[in-house]
Image 1 (cartoon, rainbow, N blue to C red):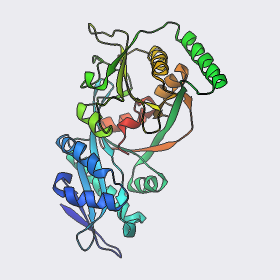
Image 2: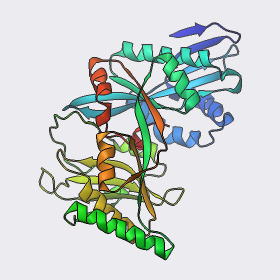
Image 3: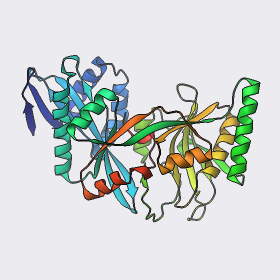
Image 4: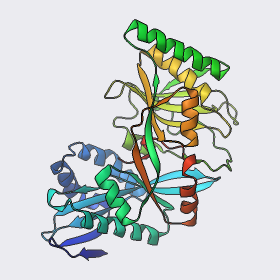
Length: 342
C-alpha cells in the first residue's frame, strides 16, 4: 500500500521489504553521509527482515527515495511474559526534504501500519533534537533519557592512577566479597550464557540473538569482544550474571554493551570483578549507556559507575496494552545503547 502527502514536493509513502530496495537504499544513505551503511545492510538486514523488520520510504515525484526509516524487531521479557519492541533506525531525509511535515507524515504512517499488524507491543527510539521533534509530532512521547556512565579503570599518570586504585578498593569493600570472574572469547556463546528463569518483576529485560550481536557490533565475534561471567545461577553450571564487553572500541575504551543476570542477582559483584579483569587487560575506562534515574542506573552507580550527563531522549508509542504497561514501567527498563538502533 502507498499513501501520498500533499505539499510543494509530491511525496508517496510506501511500506517495503528493504531487501527489495537494496541498491536504492544504499545509494540514498551513502549520498546523505552514511558511508558505513552498505556494510551494516549486508550483515544485518536479511536477518532483521526475517525477524519482522520493515522499512518505510518517502518517494519524490521522480520516484527517488527522499525519506527513509526502518523498524527493527527486538525481543524483551516484561513481568514474566514476552514483549516485542519495534526499535527505529535513523530517520533519514534528503537535503530537499528536511522539513517537519513530510517526516511526521511518514512516521505516522509507520505507527498506523505497525498497530494494524498487531505484532509489535511498543515503538521506541532515541533521537537527536531535530529527529525528536519529528517523533513527538507523530505521536511518540518521552519516557526518559539515556545517559553515559563511566567507571575509571586506570590512568597513565601515577598520581591519578593511585586515586583510581583507591576508588576501586572502596568499591570492592562495598561489594563485601571478591567475586570469581571468568573471561571468554566473543565466539564462546551464541546467546547470553545466563539460564532463563521465571521473573515476575516489572523489569524490562532484553533477549538478544546471535544475529543482533552481529548486526549491532561490526565484526562480532572478534578479538575485541569478551564475555565475562560471574557466580553460579539457578541451573547447574550456569552463571548468575554475564556481561558482553568490547575492548578496545574505536576510542580505546571498554564498552559494556549488555548485562544479563538471574532474578535477584545484583550488579556489584559482576562490576567489581569486571573492572579488576579490565585493569589487568590495560583498559582505562569502562562505559555503558542506561536509562537515567532508573533502577538499573541506580545499581550501576552503587557499583561505582559515575553518570556523565550525556543525555539522549527516549521516546515511545504503545501499540498494545502490554506496551502501555511497559511505558509506565520505564524506570525499570534494563536496556543499554546496544538495544537501540541509532
